[in-house]
Image (cartoon, rainbow, N blue to C red; front, side, top):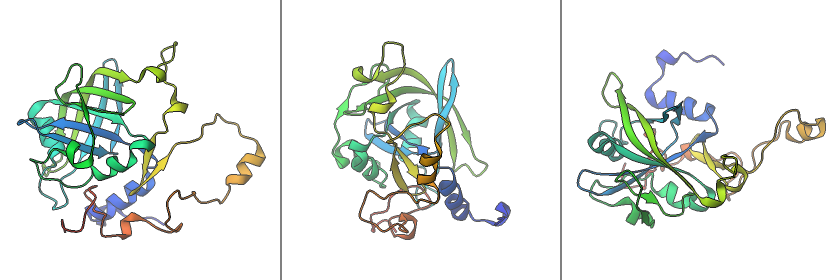
Length: 241
C-alpha cells in the first residue's frame, strides 16, 4: 500500500509513524517548573544526536487539546534544564501513569508515587530507582512552523550510571537493565540480544510468529482503539476528553 502523506491529518500520520518506527527508546524526562513543581513525561520521539559533547534530542507535541504546550516543554524552555532516565520494566507502571495530563501545579512525582533524588549539576531531580540518567542543559529549541511542536536538543552535563551496571572497560552492562521501549501506543521489554548470523532453526522459529503479549489482552489488541489513547502521546483517563 502506498499512502500520500500530504493528504493525511496529523493524527493519521502519527499512527503510521508510531506503528512503523519500533521499538522506540523512551526518555523518561523530569523537569521543574519555574515555581519548582516537579513534572514527569515519557517521550519516545527521542534519540542521541552527538558524542562530543554528548547530546540528545526530544520531539514534543502539544497536549490533547492540540494547542496547549505540554508542561515538560514549558519547563525546559523556561529553566533550560531536564533529566532523561532509562525506562525499565520494574518502573513501567509509574512511567505509564506519568503520561497522563496533570495540572501544572500538581507535582507528578507525588501523583504517580515516585521519590526524588537530587541531581548533581542541574536542578530537576532524578527518579529514585531509575538505573541510568542524563542530566541535561538545553542547547537548542527548534519550533515547527505552527509553533506547537518543538525539537529540544540537550547537552548531557552529567551521566548517572548505577554502580553495578558500569563495567571496568567503561561500557554499560545492557543485559542487566530490562529496558522497555514503545510499540505504537504500547510497550515492549528488551529481553534478548544477538549478533548475526543466526542459525536456520532460530530464524525458522521466528518466521511468521507474532509478538508475545505479556498482559491479558488478545493478540489483536491496540491501545490506539481505546478511549485512553490520544494522538498527543498523552494517556487519557476518561475525564480529559
